[in-house]
Image (cartoon, rainbow, N blue to C red; front, top):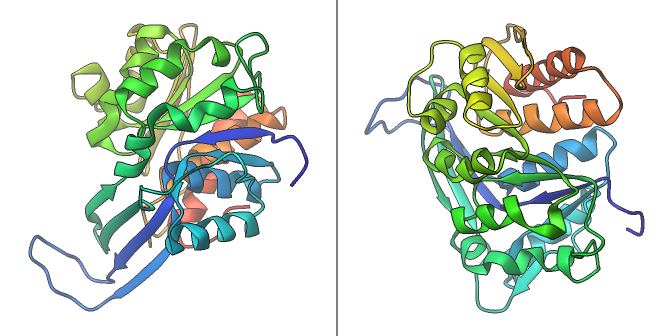
Length: 297
């Protein structure tokens, strides 16, 4: 690819190993189902969805030079993603994520993103070397960032002069990593994409409504906050106003990746010039399509 990317996606690019069963599952359940392996990671999921919406994403991540890494990047290029800026390590293996889903949703998951964490700031070299930007000519486009990065690196990104002009869009990788987004609250930068549980962790409280969570995130320093709550009302807040919308009602067949789909659809819709209310509605529709088993379009 030779075109300038429309957006950078910084974070996890790995293999997803997903086990899905059609039955309700509890702790210790042993049931028949299907196990699949597919390209994943928050940054990659967002990038793939952005590509389906017609954007040209470039990946900034860490991928090993092992056979798994070669296969993974080949598939990324097949999706229309720019991989030339991905940091390749001889010593670090390609990361993996494993999840188990039942009819009652996500049962458990383990994210093995140790190589991404070990690579640290090396994945940002293209933004400082002149390949995509540098201190005196910072990258000025949108950047999607996922919370699989360490809090130290996220703190660095929030204050990095080479990213001072960028439109930062940030999502936690999971509720367990939600606190890693605190540097953006302290810096007053970026748009946060979180669910109700993650918003509660960031605000150290519990919320019953997405609207309340989005407003408090902005009171705590977020420049903008989008909060989802499954099939319940979602909200998009700034310090000046908060808008809400209800997602379409659908039969849920999968959940892993729904938040990434919502974020990507929202970014792509706004990139086409849509108003805030329209962008929120269309992103919720895309996420509903995804969890119902359809491919968002």
